[in-house]
Image 1 (cartoon, one colour):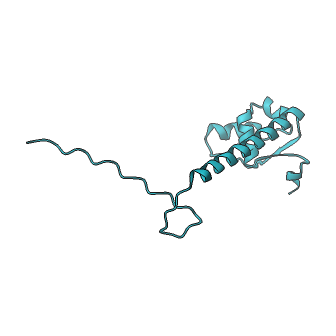
Image 2 (tube, helix red, strand yellow; image 1 turned 135 degrees about the horizontal axis):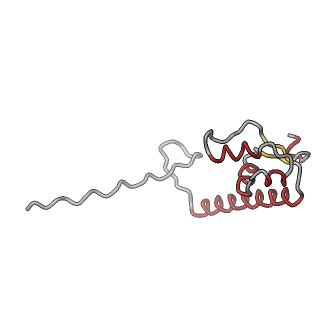
Image 3 (cartoon, rainbow, N blue to C red; image 1 turned 45 degrees about the vertical axis):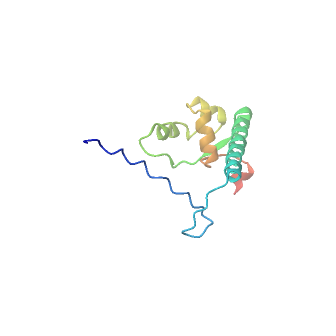
Length: 121
């Protein structure tokens, strides 16, 4: 008498289809694949962190992409405009740059060490 029906449960998520499978085939990543991807990401972050720390320690000469790649109007874009003219790691920090921004920009290739093998490419 007058009772309301219980709300329907939320729909279940579809299994994620891997890019290397045929359309219509739902194959989820195994726990081992997920763990391997997680470890690879951690290793990449460690490599970037070490490289950036080395730039800072040596006060290495650096060059920035002059066209600001950040979304216009954001704090990140404003910071980038402030430090993109820096030619050494210490100058970058003097212009307000942070380790977090340097790691991100280095990982994306917005900054390179002048004279480094990567700069030659």
